[in-house]
Length: 123
Length: 123
DNA sequence: CTAATAATTCGATCATATTGGAAATATGGA
DNA sequence: TCCATATTTCCAATATGATCGAATTATTAG
Image (cartoon, rainbow over all chains, first blue to last red):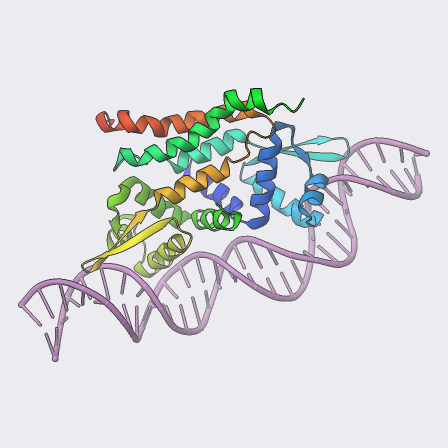
């Protein structure tokens, strides 16, 4: 990931409303959410939402697809992954042992691979 | 981590110069770098640097300590860790298997514990 | 074709952030 | 004390971003 791309993503996420949108989409997963539903859930004006979705989209953090009259937005997990990787890149250069705590964070994500799949299903 | 704190960190990092500063400090580790050295390394005006260091500091991403005439800045790895955790929080809610790729990122951080120490320089 | 719904684009105003020069503060040495 | 170094603060000009109402495009149904 290039620095410029990372800056775009970070500044896109560095906004109250956009971070809320993104986290909602991350939570929703690849299924995504229609713009109108996002607007209702977060209680924001449709034009403001549209502007913010555009910023997130332009930063590469989300994707969209039309489905009937609605436009469905989804988080781009690959981009998110790239951003996290960029942020901890070179973290070990000076003192590798500092990175250990960061591993715990990753462990939570890895846990999703097994734990969440089996225990999450609400039938 | 509260959403407001995350927004502050992300918007602080969503800036060309500040991201460069932060990554330099992450690379440097807990030893830190003096403000003047950062300015020389990144070739920025001391007052601009000072303003940006203040933003990063206020966001909780870096800490500082005086050492003689210099002020040494260091990345706050705990805060960084908290931010990464916040970003992937609830990621599994909709589709746990999506989180798997994120695990690879963490794996790199964990690898630092052993690998980086022994074969750091790629020549 | 017309009406209704979904979402975006336009345009103006307002607020906030960035920049760089100059001055001020803090520390260490002669 | 006086000077040099290191960093920060102050200030004004400029640029960028956010917000909201109103108009516009796209899609589906009648």
